[in-house]
Length: 110
Length: 124
Figure 1: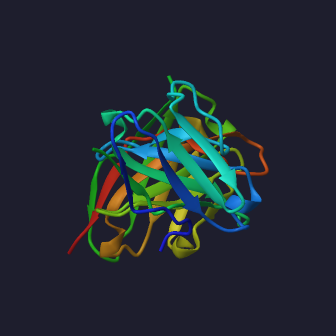
Figure 2: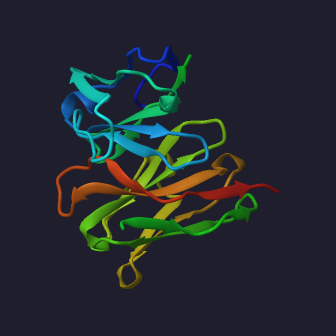
């Protein structure tokens, strides 16, 4: 069982927006602004999409955005494209000086 | 360019140990924490642990404590993860990944550079 809770799957049509939630506790998401999101295509290494809740690494499309409220973080993808179809994972720093991952969300672009 | 290159696939028997290497290039190896993350077949990402390449200090997920040893050789900019007493459910792709925050730091942040992954298969 993962420490952070994500929906197993979400879907959307090209051009639409979707949001993936990630729920933790006050010992991880709620206690720190060190939430990150990763895109993972099968057979490839994960790719960092969002770090420290809202920041995008250089080269990541501004269609990806992050936010946080209380113990829940969210990743929003606007203007869905076929290439966005992948698994998405959230992660958070914890009070034990560890990292926790969510269970992952499979995004399907219809 | 910043790069992490891992060692090749391994096949081990239950009860054995495996040691995976991760060679860094393109940045100051001792300046950033290194993490290990794994993904079992059909499962999600699972954090294993981190090493501070400067001090050698480590921390790992509770479920791996006592079985995982993370070390580094700064002379060749290489991190190692050894997992002992292997079980079939340790079969997974193991990744090394760099934390984007600079050592020293009071926190961990995000993993901005990843190795290509090493498949470890545990089978009798």
